[in-house]
Image (cartoon, rainbow, N blue to C red; front, side, top):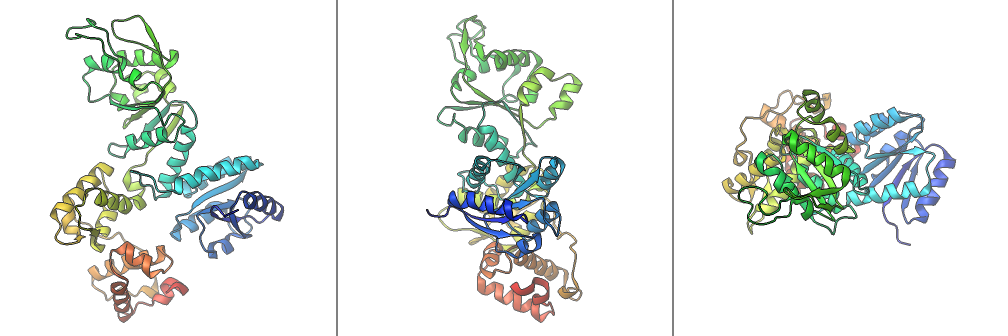
Length: 444
């Protein structure tokens, strides 16, 4: 049997390790075993890592944080005991993709690995490189396997509709329709008829019967975007639809049965709206069965450059265009108050403004001037006598080298330069007295 995926198992207990290795090997996985946290950090990275809470030399949360700082992009699954729920939650906050609770059955382990592998595969029109994004997708994948209602929260422009489509496409309903309704874009007087449909003569202008969005989505998924803008009257009728799983067109008393998955999305805090009395509490609990929070772009900075490249590929003409080093620095440092929607607009504009095959920071036309954040400088970096602009450039190069474990080719690709140009930069850094060997270790 051909191996599916390389797995790094970090487990000090030999009995547990032998049992897991047997299950994983039989399922076609290639497994490397590390017995301590520190030895595992020295191992070559694997696409998936399983790490135990019983490490003898360091805490599991500390280990996951160290693994993240090494620039590892592999999915990490924490293995905890039943009484370690808080540790599992803290480890997820540190960057773990998911967790398993001991004792678990072989089927649970293999099912979780299948979900994680699905997340690691390239997805059309979806970019998720940061651990925060992958955590959300992992939860979304779980939600997709059920028929329960989903409530997606997040700031405007974060891509809530894209996440809703992902839930639909990963669900058994993927062959059915996906219907998105922006509740804020439809006049309050028309929203009821748009959602539930109407019969001829139900109101002035209703010259013929019309099906509603719920009927159109039958057998599939309906997304109610900006649901926090829905009026109390429509909220009450929506609650009945969710409870009875049937809808009546405006002006009719005939019930139409529904087989539908409801996803709601909002940039408001619905708990707060419930406290204010502007959103029904019973409707909130009907919708908030499986909550998903899509973090703002500033909290998942590892996604910024991959998403930028996705938009470049989407909007560029026949010529090949790349991001220059200063453009990458500017994109990474900007706070993105408009989130992905703003990033898309900036890239479209930059493609128009550029000269040549590279987008520069000037082409981005971002609204403020950026300075590199203050970074800890080691004695070996010796930047004191280097001009500020060069300091920022050298630090950025060192960041990328650390991220890719000293790999010159990957670093050059990330910087948008040739490997030859990178060699010249490194030579210039050495001439300035920067000890790359000490800064980067043996990788230099």
